[in-house]
Image: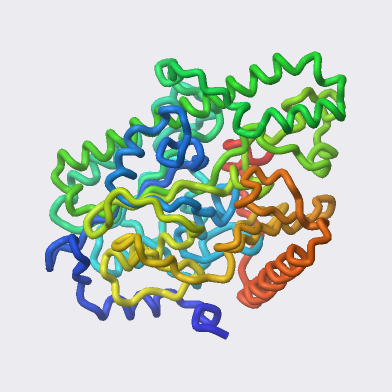
Length: 487
């Protein structure tokens, strides 16, 4: 058993060891000068799929400010979130560990990212729009200042859409006010925007793209035609249904355009305060979003009381949290700041769990916990270096678990509930994940699927040997209801 797996239940032991060291000095080339540790700004965007950003090849101008940061920093071509909905994904991101089962709160036996920064003398703050990332779930650990969800924004279900349309600006004001009060000390600031999470209600000016982009060109049209060949009765209503698909994607993209403005405003504000030159910036997302890309499994259709009356859209997935297709788990991963190379795209597959060890490494911390995530700091400093070797990357939701081979592109999807089939996809040859290879009969596919399944089962067994609660708190369930995760 590795040190990672045998860690004791008291996280304070590790943090105490970290406190024995002096405040780390950043010595990377181009980094901050000796004695001035870098500030760290972590921006997490809710529900942001990578392929709807310009820097990831999207033809629409949804993200000019993010694209500019990417042009001056490093992005990873394929980053995988460790879950397809917020709570487990953020637990992974804040601990550097994979998720293998329902995990309702930050584990007590693992140090959280903010705790590790505070242990090194940083002042820490979290300004978080999504209430699921809350105190009840343990996310306030290590933060000197923690502002979250409905405390700031109010109850979105009771106040309509106006408040959500301005949520990013509210977060920015609070983040910049806090930063202005802590200019003389190194800080770790975590800002979590709720856009572009449902409902998609951007202000009108963010809907004017003035382009002829057709979202059905992104692989959707052949899937719709396949369904209509099976169900000719759906064809009459198809034009209206497809128009609604286009409108949904327009609105989702409009939310991203608003979010992009907010990130630009935050960066400009910190620059005006004179701190950006010595600030490491990281951009991540908790998960992506399904926009009628893939067919819903019969398992979900059978649970849908209205399934007998469904039109075309109803047979395709909108939202997140119920599968691990790439549109749900492939997220942006961007780094910018002192010591980081400029204008590079790193090919290959990395994990959101890599964020914790990477930020600690970039900040110069010599002592870091052992995690499933791996430090990418050496690649960020010199993108010609190879990515660290790993066996597989895990992405979890309650219904299925995906295990991704980091170099070969294969993704095994294994069900966690009855009624959903096993699937195997080659995400390089088939980026739309249309061809299930699990029953292809190809011996190479059979061996690869067996190896991924064996690796996953071994890790799941190790996870079961570390007891943790799997019951959601009622407070968490209520927040999930308000955000639309459960009824």
